[in-house]
Length: 433
Image (cartoon, rainbow, N blue to C red; front, side):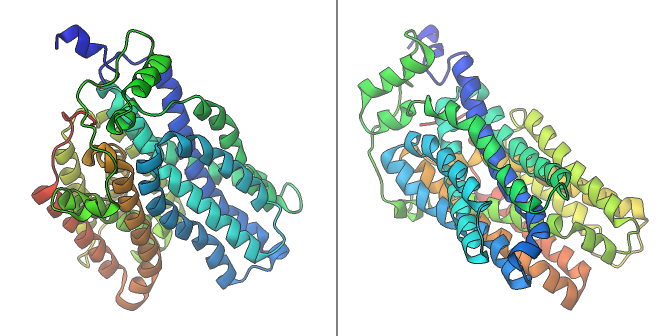
């Protein structure tokens, strides 16, 4: 194959208007994910009078979305690998829009828990299918940056929910309903963009549907572009193939990387003010703001460097630096306040930057016939890790002290780095097939 022909295949073509629309459609859904998870905490703080929310009910409402995410991500992978990416990619924003409306009309805790569970399940579908859709449509020159940009979109959605929620707070009785209702706005923007996206050519070729793949590429990119030239049409595979000899190491790496990143991320991020106060840091609120600014800055920096660093180096290096930053605080040393805050800021920035690599690396680890299933497995494992982290950290701090909790986070980060160093394959130069 000559160079000109290779350039004009869909995985090597110059990025154009279709790729930009698809990037917005994918990132917009992830923004909606972050926003939907972020707004509920502020809404619950204002809904107690209307719904008589006690501690147990508040926990059920807050945890229901995480439970839904686990189920949605785990179930979506095999479905998307069997029926295609487009049906779920096009429909889940419509479902999320409907549920966003319903959740602000509920009159009981039970109905709100049900709505939040279904919202979580819908978000779980998008965690899986957006990564697969973007990975399989984007040309190699743009793929890493677009997938990494999903981490920035999620962080932006989560942060904007905080500011919008507090702007609405106190505006009128029942303001919590208006907070929840704002979740439908990103869906309204994203849904029309998704309806026009065709099925991915690599999935169609994988099913032996060559004519459909050619038609999809020419509809999206023009008559002079062809589908990727080398894709094995191997057909659908069983979900349990992820644990077979060919893929078990990659499945282990995917789950370990995600879990070992989210445990300290959620544990320290959720309770950062409490942890800093336990370390005798005065002005913990301001320090918490610094921490969150570092999270957002890290995501942006990660986006800028994700294609400049080999995947393995990015993974192992981020685990090592984050572990070192936290390890400095484990010994009972009276560090100055600026040292403690700096260590937390470094940890936050590095872990947030490393979250970019997850969006890129997971789709690259798995073949087309099991890509969505592999991503779904890793996402589901990460939800278990995040739930355990947010549950156990306050318990560990209360029973064993804050330095024991920090030490546990260091161990988790070290495990992630070691597993990556031993088993993680390099995927950056490998095309999506």
